[in-house]
Image (cartoon, one colour):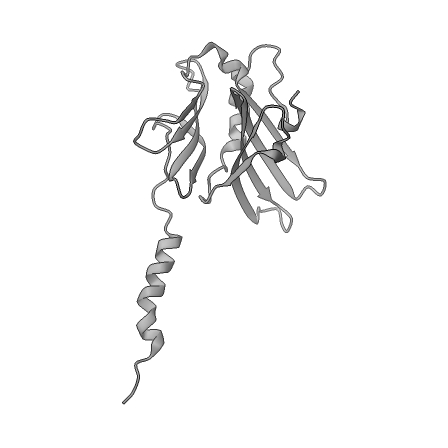
Length: 190
């Protein structure tokens, strides 16, 4: 009796498993169709989505808003609460920098909610060529009075989660209150 070829028996399972982990599906976002999605990150296993959405169409006042929660449900966190909040000009900070070898470029948009700071980060590795070889996005948080390393970190699994974060710079500069320092790394918090 001849045994069946084990590869022929296993290939449907291998195919299903590879499809399960390689299919990205539609982008999960809280941003509306007429808004710019600067950042989108799905947190696993909760399935909650962090989105940084904004608008600068010249028709209405420009704004930026962080939205966090499950898609289709009421949001867990909304910063600022309203897009026309008078404090929006004091809400967001921006920072972009390179490591000392110019290989890793970091872009950060960060903000504070009560006693917690949040940073949306986009990290791009240029160590091997002019074209980026690796991209990672993450969300970090820490309590007031603690170092950024004393909080938590979530790594985004979407390939393009933070690739549009750099373009938030001009909007943050535009909405910043007059005389407010808006270009600042989180490590400079006083």
